[in-house]
Image (cartoon, rainbow, N blue to C red; front, top):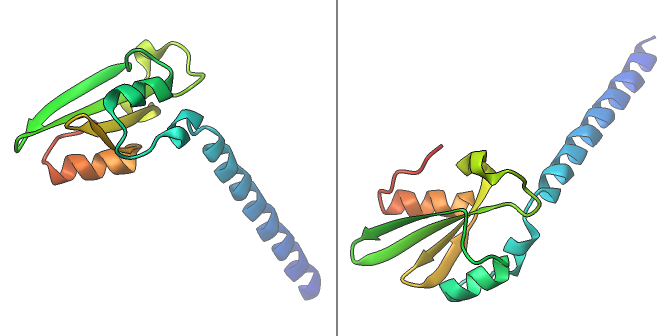
Length: 121
């Protein structure tokens, strides 16, 4: 009986790991493929061309220590009804003085924190 419990426990553990792994793959699949085409240092206009859009959903401009920082929020590709999409469901792209410095929430949170910019959670 003890041997059967160990086998059942291992099977359950492997099943749970597989489910978690598939959940992780699903999260990666939701990433906007346009972001993978971006390169640090490209111009703001090039960002818009790569994103295939004339203007982002929203732009938050900041002037901090003589630097012009723009956080451009893009609805993820395939998103519908972007009027009510919360910020954290969008893809932020950050441009400083006209050049791309980063994208994604980790980057924006880091840049905002370093410049004492309050970002919605």
